[in-house]
Image 1 (cartoon, helix red, strand yellow):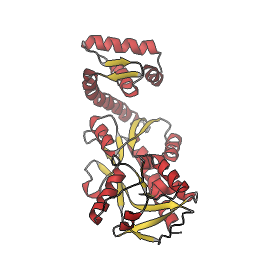
Image 2 (image 1 turned 135 degrees about the vertical axis):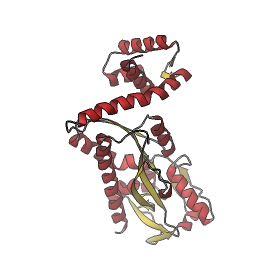
Image 3 (image 1 turned 90 degrees about the vertical axis):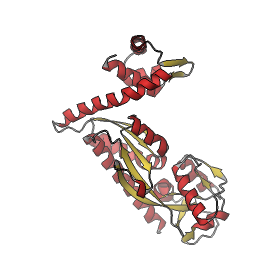
Length: 306
């Protein structure tokens, strides 16, 4: 088993498809298949199940991926650190982001990273906080941007922002709402919010339980941009953080109100693996993303004050 085989194996494990993996590796499909076959022969184990829709890891493949991923990450990081000796900020940064962060600022942040740091190879995925924290621990992600209760921040977490969650409805909704709405008012409203798989829903459920009631949403949707569209075009309301509402607020399609008694605040942090050092490329990427998230949250808050 050599370094190239490990890289090919991991890419195929992540893509789950020979065509996509070969394209990612910039090689032809037969070359990739041959290297995987050699790897399986040398180990004496089948690493992938071959099915009509692609490929998935066998138990032996899963065990190998868990061991190999940190090794490849450390090798890539060593190369990056050597390059940094010449003053270059380069390397591969694999980052996971909660949906509210990815959908609000990722396009602008990615464009800034590409312009300022052309030698950084950025890979981004969206997911739930708990899943991405597991991927960071396993070495599959370098960084995860997650919803994190401020008092529970781990030593490897860096705080990005604390942000109010706001009650929002369509701009033309006839419901009369004061500028500041008591949280218990939610008990009688038709709302659309994320499902219980979502970190934001857990924040809302905890607040409702503390207020002595349970949320009974009309719709549960985990795609936050879809929630904003539903709210903008129906009489349903939602409770989301400012950065998730920002673009729809700025377009004048929805209006938002602050919540009190209690106010609902979510914290966003970025988390890294404690066994790995922070590279210059990782720091550069996070400086841009954290700055853009903070700007979006501030802008959304100002729109609510209008």
